Length: 210
Image (cartoon, rainbow, N blue to C red):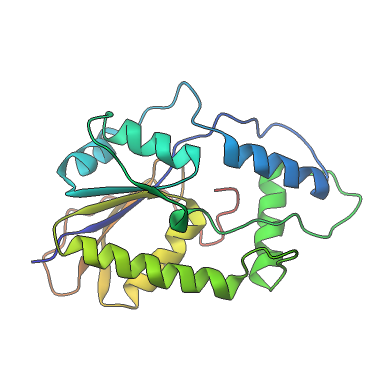
C-alpha cells in the first residue's frame, strides 16, 4: 500500500506586509520575502508535527521560510533535503505604473499577469512551471511508495501540485488551514481508505504572496 503525500505551506515569514508600495518596489519586497526566514513567534500546529513525525520522508523547498518550516515541523530531529525544484512559482513585478498598493494586492495582480503569460527576463513562465510540477509529482509518488512523504513548500505551488495529483489517480483525503500559513493537505491513491478529513478555511486557488 502506498503511503500518503502531504503538502504543507510554510509558516509566516519575518517580513512586514503593512506597507504600500509601487509595482517596482514590490519586486524588492518579494526578494526580501524570499530571503526571509520565519517570524520568531511562529510555531507549527500539533497536527503538522504529528504528520512530520509519521512521515518516512520529509522534503523542503530551498527557500529559508520552507527550510525553517520543515525544521519546526520535525523539531530539528532529522535532516531534511532542500531542493530548488520545490520553490514557489514566480511573482514578477507587473507592468502597472503609478499605483501604491499592499504587497498582498500586488501579489494577486502579479499572479494574474504571470498566469496570462507575463514572464520577463527569463522568469519561469506558467507552462514551464507546470512542467516542473510534473517532475515534482513524479518524485513525490516515488517517495510515497516507501511510506508517507511530507513536502514543506509554498501556497501556489502546492495548489498546482493539488491539481496534478488529483488528475493522476490521487484524491485529497484531509486538509487543515485552507491556504493560510502552516496549512496542509494529504493525498491518497484513489480506492484506498480515507484519512480523517479536517477542514479549515476556504480554498483560494489564486493564492498570491506565498
